[in-house]
Length: 454
Ligand SMILES: [Cu+2]
Image (cartoon, rainbow, N blue to C red; front, side, top):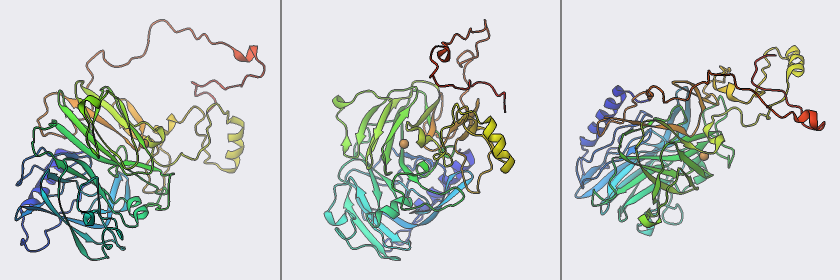
């Protein structure tokens, strides 16, 4: 989670990069980011005004103005990304991180992007969703030659349509996207009060297949990924989305994985106000608490932060809120291991019985893990283990925050009498049908709820 110290350090680093100027005739300098934590919004120092976005566990790329043209410099390169504390991955990305920095421009801006290739193979960048000259669309071989290793290419176009876009290579795509090469692009509306919100978060859905104990993704995996990430971070490494009570909040989510993700918000309803094709017509919107984001799509959702608390915000595919270890184990619920376990323990003294009463024990179990491996379900809340991993975080709504304060306020302190509690009155009689007595063929199930026998 982000501390005040890391926030201020990040702001200072980005600010310094934004004001230092290389000679305008040369390639602009390429700011680098060393931190995987959410950086504060990058307020525009020049050019047209806009309300900046906040990139979850990411940052926005500073630019320089050169004769009225906004110039950015992206460097495609191998990076080391911390997926969550305790696990780092060897990825490919831009300017020190995967995903790359968010690029923010304003409708009508003339934009020039220098792309330097420091990868071990050629690359390109495709600007997903943009209206631009065909030769700037970035499909290697179709629209341009590939950018060779060590070379710098220039993309230049007018940001014609306001909205939310993504960027990624269109060169050896299977490998380069599996390695984490992607980023967000926001074209803000020329009129800053159009669709204005108080907090505007952006992140990409991505996924990796990294063997427990290793650090480099298996790039041939098509479906069976084991790390489900938001901006290349897995819970508990994903920062909370901090909001002020009463704020209008927008969250823009792009999907560059190989499957769809039903993204679910607790405690509030939202509407889908934008896609990568543009803003939706207000008459076309309806309330949702989950929206499915298909492969290659972006959805912008908006809601009013009306209720204080720490609200879960996650993908609703339950395997996508888990980290590695445990996708391949058989279902053990209701299986009585007692006889078998003793026999196995005679051969394998460390044998551990897992899953007999469900898998919730995994949330608190200190299993020995290979180095550089995240526990399957992890993260501790104010009431104990949260039993989540992967695509999970919280929307934290608090009263009285400053307008640009995105720091983690800690866990919500529930007012007395507002937390689910244990019944301590009359014992509840357990009246159950006894199917075994009536049907001799009914399944025999060992009763759960007791630790006896372990
Ligand atoms: Cu998912």
